[in-house]
Length: 622
Image: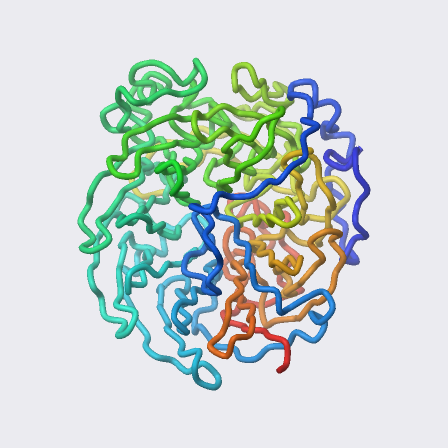
């Protein structure tokens, strides 16, 4: 039986599926929710008002100044002019060519009647004047990143966006720079180089700006790059602190204030002793996903990436502090707590996905939680004051593990899906990109639901011995991905974190690699990899509107109030990223192992879309 659908009815599928891969994993290859449930706490009967605090999600001003919308990372717009009654008339009002045909994963940013967009490499930044017809260009900035950075980028040359703060647009470049531009002129206020492409280090994530500091992490785990997070002074770009995710406590900024909830995370220099000698120096744990600032508790949360290499037999141990969530003091970087979702990760289950900060009823009392849909297939509800896992439930097909032991916090690994040198282990679910990769979920305080864009894919995996050579791939695995149960490759799931089950699920032909955005009028917007931009009913999943664009969508939709007082929806098209590499390439669609095994499951995508790069803005005719 399908993993997460044993307690609810599905919404009517919104896509007529075409090709069904003969290699799709049969349903009896994955655990049912009931089978995994023995390791989980009983669902709480309390259903109350789940919402973010006002400190983390202040009253909506109609702008969209950061990719996550607010510090709670809700991606919720309080605007409600576009409704289920009139969304069928939603139409494009202007578009803008980005002049880059690569994976466009950024969120458009709107502040003071200006829209800012950063592209994939070469990381061009555009500022558009929303007060004038057609939103003409105000200025353009070309940072000219080092061309060689393209050659060491793991999974396309993407960029996940910038943010506006105190008169500056702040973003990262592929070659490891963080740059602040004057929003009026587009001229650099400061530039700080953090990454070193000579060792394979890049930066693709969106910086987080909060309380006078800019927080940035690095990419490069597939090239043996040691992961870190850094804080810069917002005014000057000066480095304030840097914390590594592997190595001795002094490098990880672990001191007297570090109080993890579970025994397996306690001890001296675990970032060294949980690795073979010196393996932590090239062990990954990068911070290429989402960083969240808790304005209420004055805390910083982020997830660390996979350990390297993928061949886990070369790195016995828990491999700390990879594939986990850190809470840190935002001013000093000092670690407060840590929780590891996938100790000794065998399947590339990076922990870099978003953390949504909510106040939520659990077991009869309100708790301050972070909700984290992880790549390992479980959606975690964690007490963000101390790192205790309250619940962990599968939201996609899972058989690589059998649940989470809430007493120890440990993932219960399924030995039948443990990876081995020279042996192909078949039908591992979820796949290396996870039940969900970086693409961010959204939360509505009106419905109490989290809208998760994710994959339905599994994989065959064989470990291979690999040697580390600086600046080159350090993977050690041969992977072939395939569709999950049912043959479709993507889903949008509306998840209730209180009842711990889905309210509805929408199936999609391809992985849903775009983020979701939800509005006060109960509309959820997302894009598909074959180029459909969609609005569905937030309470039922019913398709209400769709519009075909020039290329697949792997970006983050936003909603804003224009200078005329009306509501607008904006999104970037431009297929690419890891899942779309077969289009944005160059990748041979006949090589199933290409793009770290993703091409095997995405080889038909070029039949449905082409490369592109365009900003689209929609509104109700008025």
